[in-house]
Length: 124
Image 1 (cartoon, helix red, strand yellow):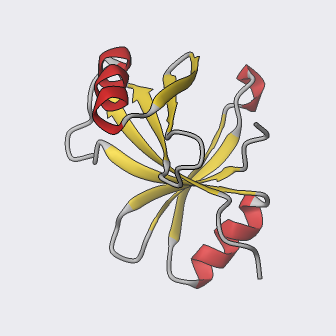
Image 2 (cartoon, helix red, strand yellow; image 1 turned 180 degrees about the vertical axis):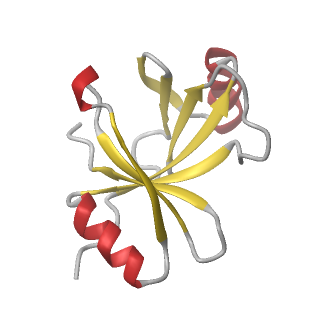
């Protein structure tokens, strides 16, 4: 059996990622630790166990799509997808951005249709 996720991230879709990140930094007392292409990554203060917050730039919010979802960061994403499938989740698709310097992750839904992603653990 695989270990539980090393990190739980909450991802928010935003048409203006910088403005959304500024709001959540102030609202939660988080700090901006990284920005890259379409993402602003916010962390709680050191020693605070709250989840990482990812603000993801989108050109337009998709109708009917939730603007918020969880990312589960694990050392072995393929094994975790298998484990979660056995628990009743369904894999929808694999997103592979490795050619552009990104990562590969699996978009899944829980038994009630809630979307989440299984991603490799961060190295930082």
